[in-house]
Length: 284
Ligand code: AMP
Ligand code: MN
Ligand code: MN
Ligand code: MN
Image (tube, rainbow, N blue to C red; front, top):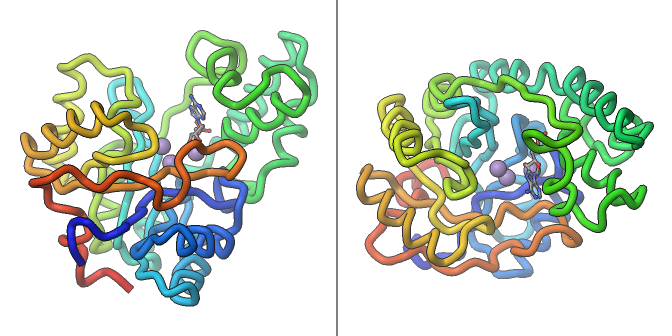
């Protein structure tokens, strides 16, 4: 394993809010030259056995993965877990608790959308859901595009479903400490996902990174489908400042929606420790 290997350690299947199965993703990743892969469904590890088997069938190495929703300083932050034991009950119970509340939230989102003239959004979103415990804003976005309320999902997130817009329902997710612990107690590494996406002040971001580190977090996504080249450079600096390893992942959700395909990412900037070097004994 070298720093330049084609690792893609962030993507989603129908087990959360992606549109491809774990097997379809594995085939696509391998076809795009991915050598080390992780499926990181939101708040769910139900696809891990299938993904590991499909990675093997397609000649890729595999790390277990998930992307945990966390509430920090009133904002939603995503923590990617890599290389943990997928049978660990602390992780399983933690994720079950994190998923709880998504249905009630979804019903409230639909009620708000009905008030602005978009009826039937709960049932409409449900048609896109692969896992009934994981109804997400992405599924609502697909329904809003289907009924012509918006032309694509980015427009949905500009006009609806985000703070101050119709269909936004605040939600309390896992704590940062719990998420990092579920990952690390199972032998994995916790990684701050796509840090440039959060709307934090400099002080809040510093608090996120220092508290994450204090709880045992060890990595940050530097190269992701959510970052520009300038943002990757910036968070390479943050990784060095905080002594964190660097991760790389497309955050691929769907051939129709995702602008970064599996494995189609620049290499990590020089001088960083790739997370996969710390996870050598967890790779299958
Ligand atoms: P939820 O976990 O239900 O709050 O849904 C969050 C998901 O919505 C993310 O994982 C993304 O897949 C999607 N999402 C959030 N913001 C945007 C955006 N601006 N554009 C496209 N997709 C987004
Ligand atoms: Mn998503
Ligand atoms: Mn995310
Ligand atoms: Mn993601």
